[in-house]
Length: 300
Length: 264
Image 1 (cartoon, chains in turn red, brown):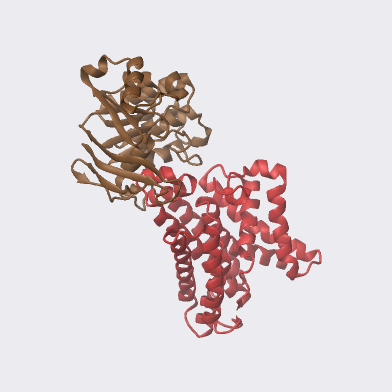
Image 2 (tube, one colour):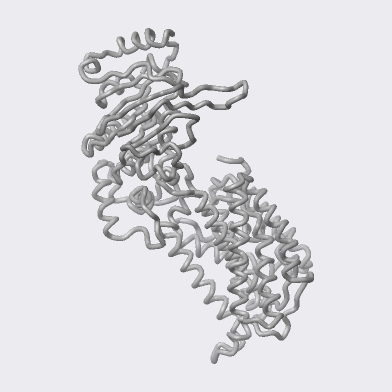
């Protein structure tokens, strides 16, 4: 592959790893299979695209994309905690509702951002960065988000959030309102996912209403790849693993494309990667499938 | 201290599986009381503890601690007053988190959790000192994940966590039943040391009649959701297991057919 392809793969991988960090927050930290991700990724892209294409500030648009994702997560969280809808169904409901919402936001099925000002075009104007604007900004974002997430998970609230996913009964008896923790985790997760969506839209210079389809599985594949290869012995290590997984997943996809598969085959490839990871005994052992969501054994 | 007045709890109300788990039960605990609770399976012992802890609302009656009515308070809001150790050692700690992380969560019980770094050197020093009390060598393993500990170690840690932030009321739900006899003795010793050391008001469910009489200052026996025996002082110190069983049969009007209770 040419250097150009490698570079753009790396850029995309880093962008998607922002989304993977969000998926990690729900799937791993909260132990909650949140399918809203498919919708909130597009939501982020849609909000950023419509605002930017109508001449608004791209940085503000990106921030609003994040907030849009937060709201989507809160919606899923309320469906689950207040109305006792199962995690899977709550996510599916949000995802389905978001499809219409996203179309409303965009007003049409896709929006072009060609030759508009984006956060990347702003960054490219900085001296010495120039054509590496996308890489520089994305890398900086991933590092900052990774560090913030790590610091957050080590705070008193962060510990309560992790314990909610680990042992809800225990942390409840320590005086934590686990409903609030779940809503908080889902909000942050979907916020990150939408944030990633806005980056991806600005980088590829268009937003499409179908761009979030299969995102949850891609995120899951990335988390698994990272955890298996890098390990999960501490929170910091897991966060690094998740980011590495996000990048490696894009590399795998790039290689598959180079081998001559069509882009439309990618969802199948992604599903196969996850199936392989979940069925391979060696990986299974290393992966320690305690997660009921992934091991298919149901609750507890 | 703890005041339970005429509480009723019915499960599966209005179905053929309807079960009256707690039937107009009243109980008053004085500060520093260490009450052991016995009774056959299904007598309502755990339901009583769960009602006090707030796992579910009671159907009628009142529960108060230190004169404060907590009947309608959700579980997480009662946690500032009450701490618990469950029967299953896996339930009391978060396995994927470290010993010190588990301890800080218990240390913050009943306090607001904030957006600041949870563990500092001061907390670490305190936890080391407290863990040394267990005599299990855990004080040198602060950053180990709890999943690496044995059931006994986890239960000892849970107990320590329950006493870390002194509760008004300590609830022990057969907390040694899942441990091997030797470990169980050790955890029980720790239990009584902690309780006596801090003069904690305690409700302890046990299936072991020996323990029921050996520990604490008062013993209650439950049957079909009611308290059928409540002994303390001289009456209790003169009590034997054989007489306890006899009194159970007399009070409940049934023969004991529970192996666990006879053999214990």
